[in-house]
Every structure is written in C-alpha cells, then in structure tokens.
Length: 383
Ligand code: SAH
Image 1 (cartoon, protein in one colour):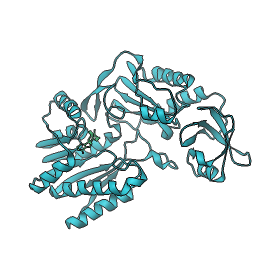
Image 2 (image 1 turned 135 degrees about the vertical axis):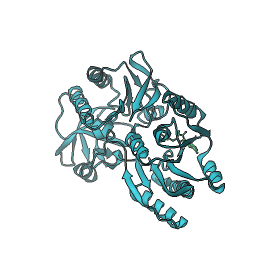
Image 3 (image 1 turned 180 degrees about the horizontal axis):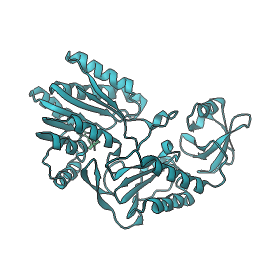
Image 4 (image 1 turned 45 degrees about the vertical axis):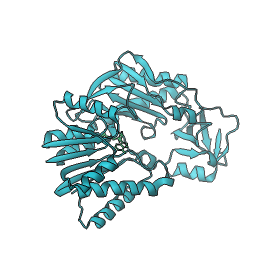
C-alpha cells in the first residue's frame, strides 16, 4: 500500500491520475513497477495504481476500484480504446490506437500505420513481461497486424531505470508499409523516423489546411511532407522547408507516391524565413509546425521569442487575404500564451488578424479532462 499526503490525495480527487514522489508519505516494501493500493494519510482507499520507483511520477492511477486481474483489465481497456476510435477516425488507416493516460492505459502508446502497429512502453509496470504479453496478444487478436514494432526511447528507459532494450519487431516480420490519411499516401518505415514515425496528431489539421489552401504555399518544418502533400492538390505551387535532409528524402518519395510536385528546400527555417521576408517573397498559404521549443517551464520565455520571430516573419510574407496555419506542440505553451504571442505579432505588424479556427490534436489523441498534460497541440488558422 502507498499512502499519500493530503496534497497528493486532493490531486487525485480533482481528477488527475498522477502523484509525484514528493506527495508520497509511505511506500515501504513496494517493488518497482508494482500494482498497488493507494490510500490517503488516514488509510482511506483512493484507487489502484502502477508504481514507479524511479520516475518523479511515482503513482499512475489505473482504476478508482480494487483490481484483481490487471492483464484482464488492460485487455478490456484496449478493446475500449479501439471502440472509441471507430466513429472518430475517418478516411485514414493511420491513427493512434492507445494514448496512455487518455485511454486509461498509463505508460502505453500504440499507433497504427495500415497493417503495422508501433508499440511503446514508458513505465516500469507496463514493461513487465505479463503485461507486455497481455497487451500484444490483445492487439494481435483485435487488429490482426502484419507486424508489431516496438519503439524504444532509451532516455525514458534510463529515467525509469529499466534495462536497455533495442527497437525492433515483437510480432511478425514486416517493417515497412504505405498508409493513407485523408486520401494522401505516405511511406512508413517502422524502424526509422522520430516520435513513432509520423505526426498522426496533425491528421485532422492536415484536412483543415487543405480546406483553406490556395495559390502559392510554404510549409515550414515540413518533415516528411504531411502538410505540403495535403496543400498540393489545392495550390499552384508548394514549397516545403526542413533542416533534415533524410526527412526531405522521404518527403520526396511521398510526393512521388502521390504524383505531386513539391519544391523541397533543406534549410534552417529561421534563416530562410528571414531571407525570404527581407527579399519580399509573398505566399497565399503558409504552415508553421516547428518542433517543441519549450521543453520545460524554465525556457518558456526563450521559446515564446522563437515562436514570435517565426510567426512575425511568416505573417509578413502573407499576401492580403492569405492564410497562416500555425502550431505549437509544447505542452508548456498554453493556448492563451500562443494567442497572446499572435496578438503581439499582429500589433507589431499593424495588421488585423482573424482566427478562422482554433484547433488542437486529432481526436485519436484525446484530451482527458483533469489531466492537462494529455493536451499539448495548439493549431490556429489565421486570416
Ligand atoms: N509538420 C510536420 C512535423 C514537423 S516536426 C508534419 O506534419 O509531419 C518538426 C520538424 O522540424 C522536423 O522534421 C525537424 O527536422 C525540423 N526542424 C527542426 N529544427 C529546424 C530548423 N531550425 N529549421 C528547419 N527545420 C527544423
């Protein structure tokens, strides 16, 4: 049994599912990765949790009730996760099947790319052999993938004090495929790529971008062409910019797969936007989807300066009536911070900006109320 301080208990009562180590009063004899009863200081039962002996997040609640058979509970949750997505995912064979806490499966991420699944474990408990087997067998039974690839984040395993492990196939033999989102096709190599291979959280924003796109378009931080290839059918010319040559090579293969022509430029986005803005280049549609600038609260200020610089330059290059789709995937940047940054940019430019849409991550990455960390992506579409 793990006992919590009153601050830890009230955190759970407010709907959160995490308790930090500093809010644990006693956890004597609880082994790493154990399934534990959680109680308040007076011993009143608060729920069942997965325990980590290493992470600052010591407790992740898995159920408000007692749990007798955890593998069975996880399998039911997987079934529910799949069912949740059936009415939500449209025109796509690639989506997140399990999103950790937001699917009541803390420490587990599963993505589907057509006939391949990518599987990632983030905690001591989820890494235990019986739970891994319960998860994998249910995924095979329900989704019948050609293969499942485990993607290991070595930093996470180190933080959780788990033994090192290599990424690789854990079921089947296939490790590459072609998937499609909104009618656009993409190559997927299960053992390459960052995150779990593609930015599935942008799937609905790709479709939104396509609805507004026209004229000449610029996709900044284009990665493997997610936005650029959605803009292409609507635009006279599309340019994609990224600093990674290997990503642009995949982007070009993706363009060919769809019979599209896109101009790919390998450059630092900050430099390129400065040069293009100074040269007076103009576009009708611009997408800005940078990596997370604010990795922690501490560098929020620097991050906001980065976002503002990018957005100012992009707005300068927008023709009258043009559309900017601008994103931040930093959890530490709130929607309010992001709107404030755009407001300041509008002020500096003395140009009124209207918000066509205020969007977030796709619905297969659900935001669980009470657990704000499950919501991280901001996407504003600006006129
Ligand atoms: N829009 C993409 C995802 C972008 S991820 C999609 O929807 O698929 C962020 C990308 O920014 C990565 O591809 C990374 O290579 C690139 N990147 C990071 N820093 C950069 C910089 N300074 N200039 C240009 N690209 C950069």
